[in-house]
Length: 175
Ligand code: FEO
Image 1 (cartoon, rainbow, N blue to C red):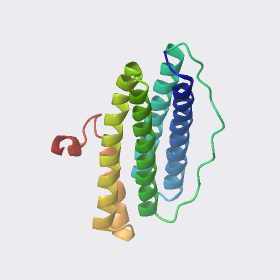
Image 2: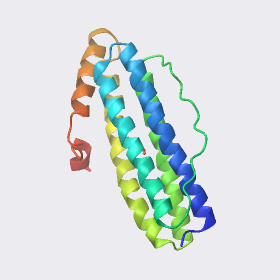
Image 3: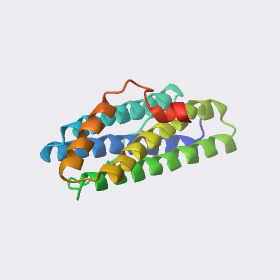
């Protein structure tokens, strides 16, 4: 049985995943406004994944006989100085999410809630993958630059990353 403390923290996570989805969808809109179709594709796809994460937490809370509660979601920023800055923000956001997942794992262990600990393991792996993927893009921005022809090449490369099958992240094989 989930403690009240864990139910509260899992509900907070539902909200954070919702926010992540809105953030990436808003970023995708900004990319479209800048003619960056490849990046818009990547971010739009990612927004869908975040909704799936939200749903996993939502279903878990309900399945354990508790009430999933949807809270107020902050509006994401709609403007970004550049594509490079945008992806640095994505990486920072994913690191924040990883910190929250780790904190949840920590509480589950402290409370000897092994079912929740087990449920969270999928998210531990997912965060590793997401950080590696976005880290790869931030690295590419540094290599090719985020202006002129570099920006065009970068956007095309991000489109090809968006087209990778699930689990098709080369960083996984390297790790
Ligand atoms: Fe649901 Fe990108 O973390």
